[in-house]
Image 1 (cartoon, helix red, strand yellow):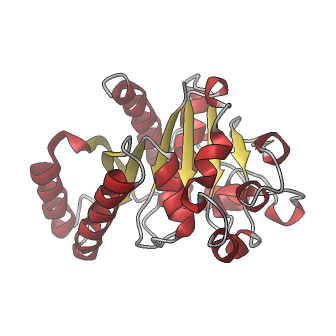
Image 2 (cartoon, helix red, strand yellow; image 1 turned 135 degrees about the vertical axis):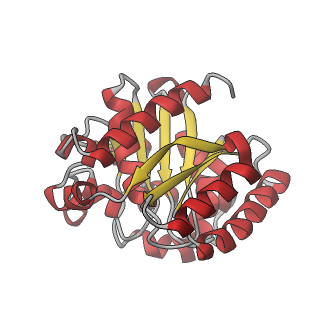
Length: 256
């Protein structure tokens, strides 16, 4: 049975897409069958996986509104080796159309049913907002991975996100839990980041992943080449951090 994880944070620019793409590629390199679901209308995870969002005939939009099956939408990332349910700007229209559909917050969960046996991991890249698309991701997942920078504003937004996850758990998805917090874009030279990191460890304990992703130019360059950072330059510090994170994820799901 596939373990479905939502990568979410309503704050923008915190590395959700970078985490999704690189974790998917690292899991594939570790021998895990992986599916990446792009729920962001910007389609950055799609492009970062080497899939041209402008050339798509079918996308996640068609899947959510019932115009296509998962098999019709699914493509493979040639550079990353994992499967992708791609997205483009069409997905922005789904926000409006989903309002009038039955089970609107569970459309993704229904679409993924029947494909459990094909994957070990399903990763859902959510948009930077608490929207109907993010709600679909949270309702379809077993757990949430929260990437965050070690900065003051990130701590402020974290409490809102945790409250939202609690509400979804109570009302819509009893399986949902926080899997862990991933510290990204970390610069150990900054005292504030060290302090916030220590606060996270003291407050959330083992919910904070041991892996820490540093600021890394090679990770930032990789999307322009249409490939995950762990494939673009496997020796880079950022790539090695995501490989360590993937191994930690594999170990962690055994205890869930």
